[in-house]
Amino acid sequence: MPVTVRYSEVDAQGVVFNMWYLGWFDEAVTAFLAHRGLPYRSMLDAGYDVQVVHTELDYRCGVRWEDDVAVRVTAGALGRTSFTVDFAVQRDGVDVVTGSTVYVVVAADGSGKRPIPDFIAHALT
Amino acid sequence: MPVTVRYSEVDAQGVVFNMWYLGWFDEAVTAFLAHRGLPYRSMLDAGYDVQVVHTELDYRCGVRWEDDVAVRVTAGALGRTSFTVDFAVQRDGVDVVTGSTVYVVVAADGSGKRPIPDFIAHALT
Amino acid sequence: MPVTVRYSEVDAQGVVFNMWYLGWFDEAVTAFLAHRGLPYRSMLDAGYDVQVVHTELDYRCGVRWEDDVAVRVTAGALGRTSFTVDFAVQRDGVDVVTGSTVYVVVAADGSGKRPIPDFIAHALT
Amino acid sequence: MPVTVRYSEVDAQGVVFNMWYLGWFDEAVTAFLAHRGLPYRSMLDAGYDVQVVHTELDYRCGVRWEDDVAVRVTAGALGRTSFTVDFAVQRDGVDVVTGSTVYVVVAADGSGKRPIPDFIAHALT
Image (cartoon, rainbow over all chains, first blue to last red; front, side, top):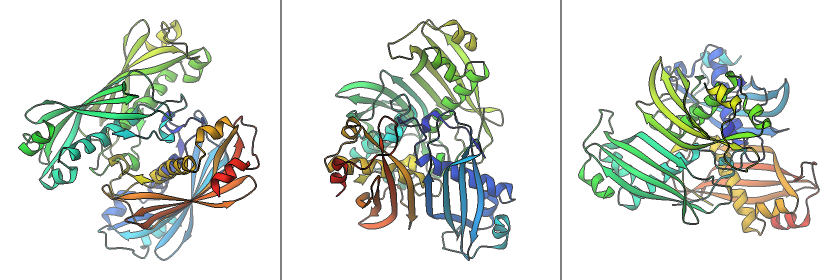
């Protein structure tokens, strides 16, 4: 997913403030799942939602305002009720920030965790 | 309402990026109404909500990271279904950014505009 | 400029929180000027910068998460040291939020206002 | 550090969107260091700055708009050029989101990593 860095995301150090990467990751995973045939809306309509339970981020170097960047999304480990997605912010094809997020599948009605249904597992593999 | 400027709100020009003032205004009007005896939650519980329909902002000078700032809130004109709130971001007691927002009172169930009920008018006067 | 609404921009009312429109406008005006042959970087390199001095926003209806939206940018009045840009957030081609921002041209070295130079005026007309 | 949850930080699921915790952590570590006698400004004036190189976050449950929350900051491991700070977002004294960030000490002039000077180590121990 290509990213246009917003001026509002660049802090006084001249680089993207760290929290914005999590906003990019969220946008990227949504695009990723839709691209795999699982728009977020259809997941909700089927009675499922996801919650973020863990995130790790490694910052190798800062992204600047006019950098040409993209977020690469890769499906990671698939558990019974949770799955991992790996993210890499790339500048000119080189990783500058990487991250990994664990999501848990829950019922959309708020009744708690659910085993990952086939149609979600399919989109992730 | 005193404001601690967040590092993430300061852009590469070294001043608070303009959109954040609207975040501050929203926080300030909520605190203002609660202070006047009208917590947002109780307004919702009574079946009312408010929507922003117009905002104006004048930027006199930029707020920097370590500036000592506060937002002053003043109730303005009160109409039949709408009311105006005036905001002033003050640094050392001097206005640096001023704004004015028009809110319309709506039914919390989404059924549209409502005449301003007495308990809201009371909080604003 | 097409906009992908981010999940993080949608508030608990289910619509884009008002401050984000200012973020979109900033991104849109930058793209607009670049499209007109004036990338922000080249303006800075030439010794000029712009500051926002006034903004007005009218919210007709809220933008929701999956809405297909774009920001239309139009150059407005051109003064001696300031110029106006008009913005319209459009959903399916219909204006839902409109805005207008006045920018003043300043020296990039912080020495104050400058008459609008020809190359900036050219990009705006 | 007490936190007033902003309406703009709450997403359509009704809970604080994950990226905002990183904004809170940044604000909290700044307050923590100032409280320990090391205002960020004086660190810069002494020729040092810090960069975030790694962050981990665990989300146990979501923070809602009117929740009474605070961020507890604890200094963690101290290395030669890096140090760790642990964060806990607490609601009614119970951890709801925890995190840990590794900072590296760099020269403020951009010339790279530096061994942690005594005055920074002192503030962290």
